[in-house]
Image (cartoon, rainbow, N blue to C red; front, side, top):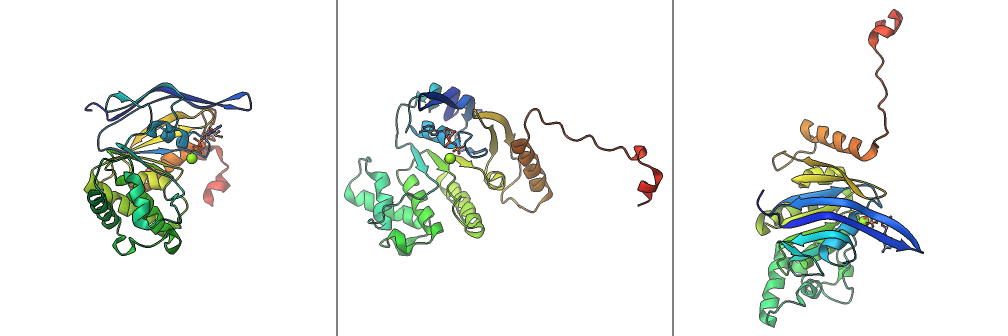
Amino acid sequence: MNAPIVSFTHVGKTFDVDGFELEAIREFNLDIAEGEFVAIVGSSGCGKSTLLRLLVGLDIQFRGQITVDGKAVSGIGSERGIVFQEHRLFPWLSVADNIGLGLVNEPLSAAQKHKRINDFIELVGLGDFARAYPHQLSGGMAQRVAIARGLVASPRILLLDEPFGALDALTRQQMQDELLAIRERAKITTVLVTHDVEEAIFLADRVVVMEPRPGRIKQVVEVALPHPRQRSSFDFHQLREELLHELTSDDHYQPPVPVQVRDLPLSYIAY
Ligand SMILES: Nc1ncnc2c1ncn2[C@@H]1O[C@H](COP(=O)(O)OP(=O)(O)O)[C@@H](O)[C@H]1O
Ligand SMILES: [Mg+2]
């Protein structure tokens, strides 16, 4: 692979909780290629959000090194945009102004900002809602505003922390389709954190399966299925079963030994 755009090397993170050390991440190593879509899956508490917070630069107390384009991460930067599970829109600001918050640190004129905001409102399909307020939006629309805010500064890497977790199943699938369409147009490296294995397989080029307490990589799985992926296809189903098994099994787990047909009495076989 070409030089990775993101590189985690021996990353570890420990929190101090009431004088006790809580090891949240242990020995996390991962290279992400430019343009790649990586999903990180794992149960609640396995350190997924912590990893994204470290990558986006919201927390710079950790062991090891995280680099973006070869430079060590030492704080937030406009080449990384993040979208959280709750949209975190400001209720007193319009859709356009909420998206504009993504540009506060950008050296652009007011006219340039205005144009950029409108471009991204169009990109996420909210052209008629620029002047609307968050309470006038559905959950899916609010999350699209959050995605536009994450993208408006034209980051090279988009980080998504369970962005569709609070949406109903149908809206979630629509948003997944839209995210792929946006990626088609914006060609952006994407790191998605989710506990939804199906979402990870539907979207990602690679799925990183995490193991909890402390958070470690259990397995990295390539998803070689062509887009658009069919959730009902045999290959999809197969991969989902495999990943679910990875997530729920632990290293000490012994699968039950299958009963040999020849060990059963003849009367069993007849039925
Ligand atoms: N600021 C913090 N202070 C103390 N412990 C934390 C903090 N943030 C996360 N943790 C702990 O670190 C572990 C990983 O948390 P998190 O990254 O939020 O997991 P996930 O996003 O996978 O659910 C959990 O045990 C959590 O309680
Ligand atoms: Mg989390």
